[in-house]
Image (cartoon, rainbow, N blue to C red; front, top):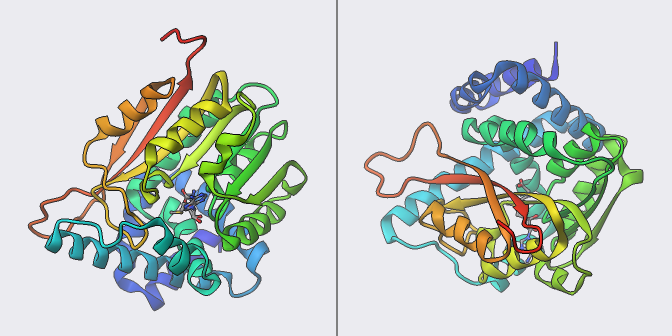
Length: 304
Ligand SMILES: C[S@@+](CC[C@H](N)C(=O)[O-])C[C@H]1O[C@@H](n2cnc3c(N)ncnc32)[C@H](O)[C@@H]1O
């Protein structure tokens, strides 16, 4: 049995109500799902040991249920529950027992949520395929590390510096990189993303910044950091959530254009975008939760 089969068998037994959504994710692109699932689950097994499947699948189901409940509260109140970064840092990012579970859950959503499977395809086909030779990469807020480790696994000539505010992220991303056999080309440092504005300009051929921007009080400052770190002509893969509540989402993006304009303001040409939503949403929902991916290129000397 493949790890994919193990995952489906485990969900059937322990979380039958989650099975339909994961099957929908596989239906997006069965060949890609099987390849990505097998790889991600293999890294999880090497990083976590024998209980990897129950630990990760349970975490993914818990995380998904929390997201549904947060969205229901958002529908009722019209606002995200929290607006303070310090609160999220104290209650989520800084708490190992909370954050470890959260990150392993998110790790699986990259292929177990159908709309995030579409983002994974965009990442592989549109971003990874464009990387130049021997790319020096920066990953801002790697969380579980899956995106950057995927890039390192695909490109043996690449190197990566990752920065995340959470100690859980540094530990888990490091363990995933080790499991994937790429740790000699990767460093992870605990640091606030906004402090990266102090780094030298133009050090990166490519930047990955996935699902951080909606976690910040001043998202514009993050886009400025991405623009600053990229070399002219360098590529960024940026994702963000719109009208999609989560315990630590504090900046409510409502329109795709907000992200596009923010990127453009900081010298990023938005070459391709993808905005996707879950297959099923709450009945009578006012808000359509979306995840948006942007493929941006640092303009050269201000020419668009
Ligand atoms: C939803 S997770 C995203 C993980 C991963 N990038 C992904 O796309 O699945 C958000 C991550 O942002 C990190 N984070 C939140 N605020 C941050 C900040 N100000 N600086 C650096 N990392 C931050 C959290 O610790 C967490 O790892």
